[in-house]
Length: 122
Image (tube, rainbow, N blue to C red; front, side, top):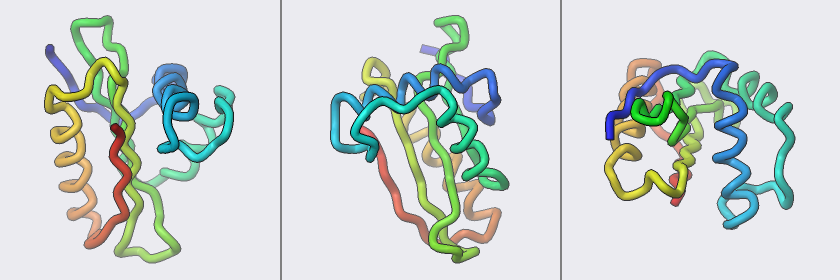
């Protein structure tokens, strides 16, 4: 499969919420107890503002999102960040997770972030 990493845009919102809601419904990895509405995406965009927020797009499927990975502030420490990474279940085990995580960590290093809390699913 051919994947492309790119910054998240507002157009990716529905697909990203679908990926997140999969984990809300099928695991303990996402904290909400029930599916989040589409408006949650706008809140998450605000939370990650100024930090890398990437999406891996499967170019063979009309550019559908297959993974989302983001940095966000961690307890107001400029040198630390929280990593969130969610992969569509049908795209696990093919290496795209490592690719997007490596890209995100490289961007974090350039920002001066030296430590992170990491959540990788599944």
